[in-house]
Image 1 (cartoon, rainbow, N blue to C red):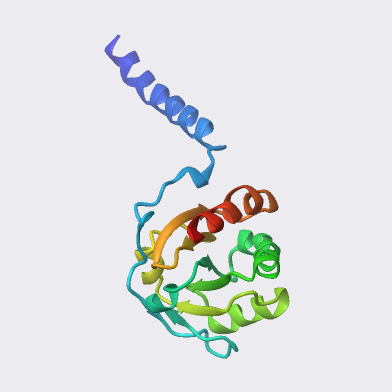
Image 2: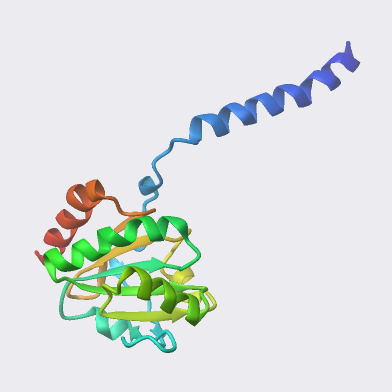
Length: 178
């Protein structure tokens, strides 16, 4: 009897893990609440992406107006999918849009933005990923709304879609404007 229990226990544990993962597969990643919501944006200074015709940026740039910060990389397939939404956001609202280019070679970031267009007012090169970690980024893409006082008021995990733009990001921008 003990031998049967020893043989069946790992199988039961494996089945339980499979069930847990199966139930979690469709979980909405935007449900991950950031501990930085309603807190000042972390202190940072990011140099520009080498060869790109927009500057880098730092914490001070986030003060004085509502801004949107998008963390992206050229190697990120969902970033490519969300890029037209960012372009539409910029064209439609004119909001100040900053990019944090995470762990990317400058030539790849430039090629990505040359191909798809550059909606960003500034793009900081986060070569080591340290600034992204300070922002609580789990993976690219992620998008933040920062109010005029430099306080993070909203976080969207994963690629923006036309629906999330309308139902989440635009209302969050309006709310941050007060």
